[in-house]
Length: 104
Image (tube, rainbow, N blue to C red; front, side, top):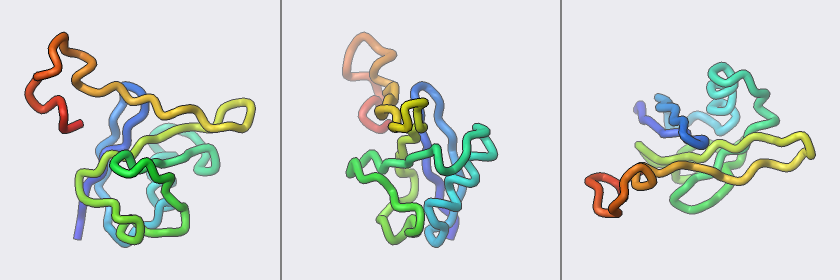
């Protein structure tokens, strides 16, 4: 059964079709083809829980659901991963009551 996840980094969002049985490593390989970054230099974090996703586990194992938001961070030169930095739609509006702002 196909599902979609949103992989976000800074101001960029990648909409990725995947299957719940795919591993996080499978997802990282798809991302690698898009951004030209090795899988070992990527970290994926499920935004709803803040949990760093385990490469060997499937999306279903880690309760990643359809339309989930996953943060992508990359390894920096000092071998540490960068902080999660996602610009939310509400950041583009002056008032916090923008339609859909809470559903990023």
